[in-house]
Amino acid sequence: MYLPGLEPAAPPTDDHDGDGDEWYTPPEILDAVRELAHDGVIDLDPCYAPGCLTDARHRIDVRQGGDGLRDPWPGSGLVWCNPPYSDVAPWLERCVSASVVRPVVAMVPMRPEIRAWWSHVWGAGGYVVVQRGRVRFVGTTGERHGNGMLTTCFVAWREGLAQSLAEALTRRGVDAVALRMVEALPW
Image 1 (cartoon, rainbow, N blue to C red):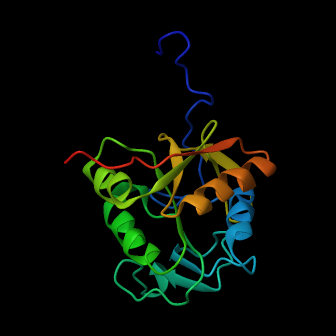
Image 2 (image 1 turned 45 degrees about the vertical axis):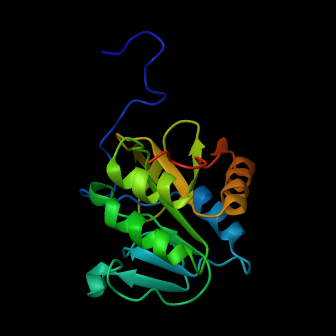
């Protein structure tokens, strides 16, 4: 039951293609992210899973013994990180450290009330891109599945990157806006 006017834009479903944390990024989002790369290719996906639609130059695949949190991140170009939503804190921390030397975009649940968000997004100069509605995840062949129970957003640690992502998403029919970084936290 929802208060009038506060109903979700789309009813939550659990008919996704994955089990637990395995939810695949839809192609329009990946196309927008590719547009951010200087050569149109995502350089690294540290959270790669066989069957996902990411065609990154470098992939760290947990099913092949990889560990995107501990393994070195190869390459020097754009990183696309769609981490397990069950524990985003260490992924946000890793993205922040990588963003010092290369562009990084993460797709994470929008949870600004948690400690990791204050430390690794607002406290680390992150810019947030939000979209209207919720992400409709896809299966291995691109078929649409359910949306998550949490609002998803995108975080970039470079202002121009966030604005460019919002514009690229909008061009692909995903209404999105980049939020300004919180200037300086008082503590």
